[in-house]
Length: 327
Image (cartoon, rainbow, N blue to C red):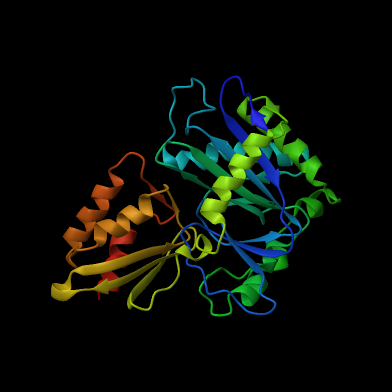
């Protein structure tokens, strides 16, 4: 669907995938592929925590040309920390149409009756294009995540909080029936229309558009390189972690001669601009293992208006964790 195509080239997609799937965030480390009965691992473009996906779940994505594309006036802007609070409203409106009294309590979750119903995250490209992604439990059980990770990640590379069935819910559990995908899509379209003031129009991609999408997807995601782009590296032997609002921040380092940072990997349950984490890693390379120097490197990267890092609390959390890894 497109949202008011006469005004904005925005797209709303509601989709499902088959099988037992674990969806990991853009900045989480991925394990080596498990043999045998491992659940499928997929990596989102957006960040945040790992989530159960696949059969019984539905994905909702909203693509906009800019953060303020659906604001009035059109020239208005949003700070990064305001994005999810604004654009999750369409998903909440869709759930309301389904008879589900869901709320966004903050951070990266969607809940109903204080139980986890879904996760939401976003990312932003250097061009300003915005992607908001949500995974909702249609009839599935989000508390299956630890069991799915036991199968797909027996080494425990992807960390998650333990969930019990009593901690989670689903659209089916809340409204008494299992919704069809088209029904969910209609609810989401209505919710975005009501909450964001747009006019979604169902649309099928033209043949040339579909071919272009397939070409781009094959180039970017046609093999396992996208999933394995971030994996534990033995040469980064200095490691430290910190508990954060979304889960965990991990810093892996190698120190070179003179105590300078030779290489760095920043990972975890993070929400960041498309090039923020790579820029932070690059900024740390060659940096002395000194708090003032490390803080300066981090501040220089985050001073760029298109770069942001959410989910860790004060930015000192990152500096502290780097210092801890330096030992």
